[in-house]
Image (cartoon, rainbow, N blue to C red; front, side, top):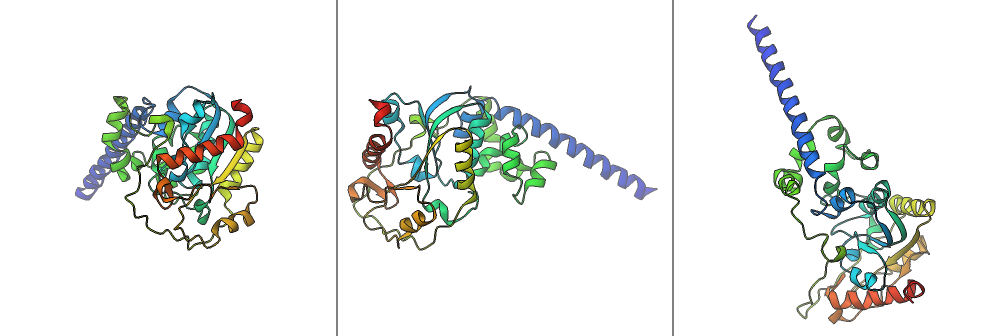
Length: 296
């Protein structure tokens, strides 16, 4: 009898815990739907549909290299959705999410170079999508192959507990307040400062590989009549690239190689990332090469 009572007690605790986790999951998820200012993903998810002339996707080499204001000054409705640490896994999902939320896109610019070294997700960036996991079909579908998918899907509040430092109480609270983060400043472009005069050499000692997420981006753009502009962005003169960019073009001849368009040290913050001055020189070249007709 004592054992029966004990098991009943444990069962009640289990049920109560599950109910509380379910309620907390709904509360947190609802809170994240209240702000479009916290991150680029919240901006996509909670903003009304927009007609974009140019959407920029990619890693920090997109985020730090394409100056949004230079596009908008030419009359092109543009946003830079490049994210620090992002990989093609996330870039593909950003494009899917933009279309799921009924945005119209004429052109997509994406940096595709060092991100071809793997098909892995970015452990820091993919977390930004998790608050919308239950609400978004494309996020659920995109995450199906992740090791934690079943836990995300079947265990309420699991994702918020596991990644509390990134999407926990603090971030939920700021979302309720609609407190603005810095990701969406300057149309999503994040400028870098000048280097200290001593750039470290960057060695590309890995190989590019065909990438299913880039392949999917190409298919999505073709299906939705979006002009895709895939670009390899500059590296500094000290970079030891080991023909990496040539190998990328052997895999994907359509990717434009801008590796050597900007090379002087004064234009770089680190060997793989241009500073604000370099980004402006580079963006001016991109505008001239791809949008001169639209800007006339």
